[in-house]
Image (tube, rainbow, N blue to C red; front, side, top):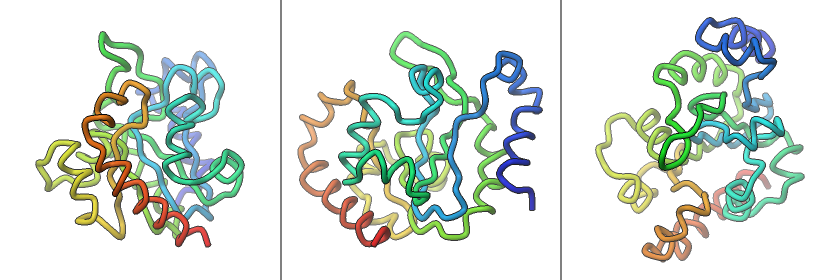
Length: 192
């Protein structure tokens, strides 16, 4: 079984990622072998790529608030893995960032997850993560998140914590009233 360093080197050597490797951009993910919680989102944003720190923006601030953890715990405890659907910033589209590249997660996630024996919960943020990890469901993101209890204890689906989702949050008050407290309770139990 290849270790995380070997996998990282293989990702960088993959012709699919040549554009990034030639520019000195390394894949952005975190997979400490001690991780108990895995966060699967879409792909790093431009700010995360530039700072070399995942979830290093307003979305990340909101995500940590939802989780009920501080920056120190999130980044330095070794309890959180962050394995997005693509490890590179995909570029901009008219309505936000481009989607993660097809086939990327299928190629790299299984190898990385073999190195994470202590995972107890995977948080699935947005449609791409939910479609990949919950392949037999056909619900919208809103419906999937509303039925979050159906996926416990292994998965907990969330909407993206982007400030752009403020309208969605205001239209769906049940999310912050029911899902966030359930999420925080799960996190607290796992981390204690």
